[in-house]
Image (cartoon, rainbow, N blue to C red; front, side, top):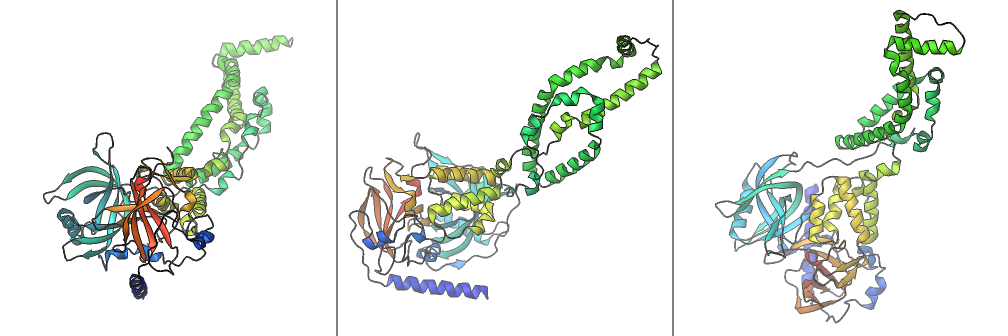
Length: 542
């Protein structure tokens, strides 16, 4: 039933595309900003699909990549591999593209060796329909190619064989891997030995860990001298110390059980650091008592101390035998241990293991970070609902990384980060820094971040392939400055059904930055927008 619904939906969308293609081509000449007054009035400045009061384009058509033609579904989907698994895969080295898990990758496979690679994975059973994708960049200093060490497996979901033998492919990113070694086999297919990266689970701070948190100031201002003044009074003051120790121990154990292995290591390192600090505080006061008690091991010394005490009170000094000395020493030692256990020393060490305020833990709580990142992303892009992503911080971290308008080198950096919390923290940092969009070559300001526009259900940035097999990652903008047009408008192989495309270059340095897309149907809104190549964007953090 579900498959039938999907087929009917796709058939309806294809009919819409055919209807758009049959419309009369009406491309307006663009001298400056390509928007009518009506469009400008409809823009509220927040970016995203909601920026237009009358947004008539069906953004779900873009994510189907209909320009690839009718495709058939692949079979024998591969399950997720365990972290640490090692396998050999055909590897596609792509310039200008960084593939993330769950991101869509269209491919136009023309070269015979890559066609052989696709045909091979479509029929094999150990790793069916799976290829490796690795980002490659050109080193500007020595003109040599630089191959990334971290890539992503891509599962072929749909494909089409053309009459000339080439292949159109739609793949989806699945799992990160580490490229161990690479080679070219006898058929000329680039291959690589890859190791699947073990992804961590989202970190959540146990909420009950802070319920009975003792303020640090209380501990710091607690008088240690009271604890050292009299062991007798100390023991009376803490008669219930054993029960408190037991309850504290249970609380600490329950807290630590809530932590993952990674959290437990970080948590224990913090505890060790705190305890060493506490030891330094009490060392001076405790040393005086230890020096006073250091002679207790010597019966003569014990006797002399006791004798001196008796003389001060004008009493005779009886002989102290070994048996009485031993009993007195044992009693003192027990009292010492009891007092140390129940004194401020123990309070210093016995403070709840969650001794940091909650906001410190929330800095690395994956769900807290996901809420913050989703709110920032919604503000910039205008996506109406991010609740599903907030509940899955791991998916959200990859989603934002694959769509954020930064340079490909920064996106590769995001791909290489291990840990959901660390990736989200870096993305929040980048989202705060993105105010303007600049040309990579000459740093000309092209647009503001509020000019971003969502023309696909995949988001404001996505990958598209041209007829020659080159994959471009482009960001869509409803407005851009400092661009010039080159050539005439074309409708063939348009990535956005119902729009014609014209090459656009930077007016200052003449670098090709992307394309202007103009509606061929007068009822289609937005009337025009820009697609800018992410590989030609300047890094906002530099």
